[in-house]
Image 1 (tube, rainbow, N blue to C red):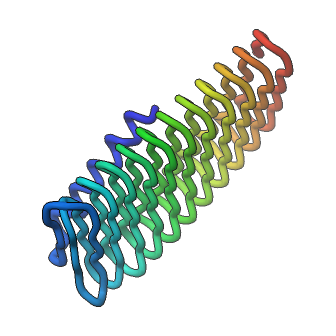
Image 2 (image 1 turned 30 degrees about the vertical axis):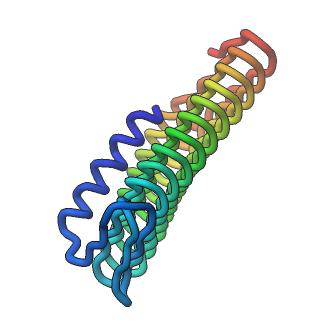
Length: 232
């Protein structure tokens, strides 16, 4: 999942940079571009338009921000951050980490850890957060979706609807909440997963190792507690 998130962040960052007239880049490690101008030292690259600000710290780090009041921050070797739209925040903290926030209003994408990624966008007030090596989070396709992933190789997706929540805690764990409104998917444990989709107000909860829970159809609730357990 993290690879897909990173690819998306890189693609959005490239589009933003192509359209940005205020650009600062050189051979080293830090740069800033914003309403007051731009400056750079080394190989970091920053681009901004409008009243947005881009900051990059680290060799080959890239930050792009376009629109009104956006902030992008990339810290780390080859870190990438892109914020497009209005008052979006994108923060990539870690080597080879990528994030994208846009193309709506008040979206927040944050990734912490090497090779991690996060995308929040295509709507308003979406939040995507990932912590851990190779972790990924995706919140998009509606409004007020929240996806949070904590752990190595973990992933969380909240999309295609409004008010969906997905959270995973544990290495190789994942959660998906999509295809409706106010779906909830929560996972706690290694190599486990939860899915809540296809309808509204479905809730899937998994606690344990190598276990899974799925809820779909509308108003369904599925809970799994224990190791090597699966429902349905």
